[in-house]
Length: 211
Image (cartoon, rainbow, N blue to C red; front, side, top):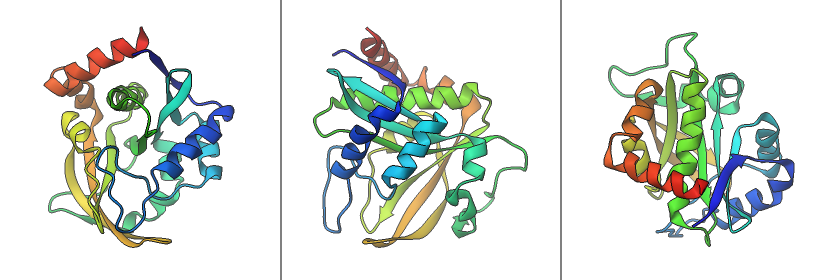
């Protein structure tokens, strides 16, 4: 397998939107291989590309997947942060200390035709960028209801993330959705990725992609 991971360019927008639409959620649907995506209109993807927050995976000369991760300034200015009052924190958990740089891993998606081996290195590239930029904690959500979406759980466990709360939100065309909120300390995430079995597999795949 050959390919590369790079920041998205404006010309990648149609391919990104096509992948998102291929992974759209419909009540009663089942996506056992690659999960699914909720929300996010083309205009938001365009803004994320402009802000440098969207990485793409190329395979066979095509955009095979993408990852969206929000650094601290964009996260705190986003609708996600504005809705943080909806979070039900677990005991002894709560908002990060004021002034601590935090990040949010928003989306990870692969085209239906893409090699599944690309998911982990794509996610790792995003995590590394956030860690090297000085972020202290990485947050992410995984859908639990009305249908469970476990696609990202192995990766989250691999970087030392734990469930710190849950959040219930309303999505047009879907209704109420409930997600677990995960948190990973980025000071430990890269160490975990390069020491655990999952991390070793990711490193090997990253090398293959860069070849």
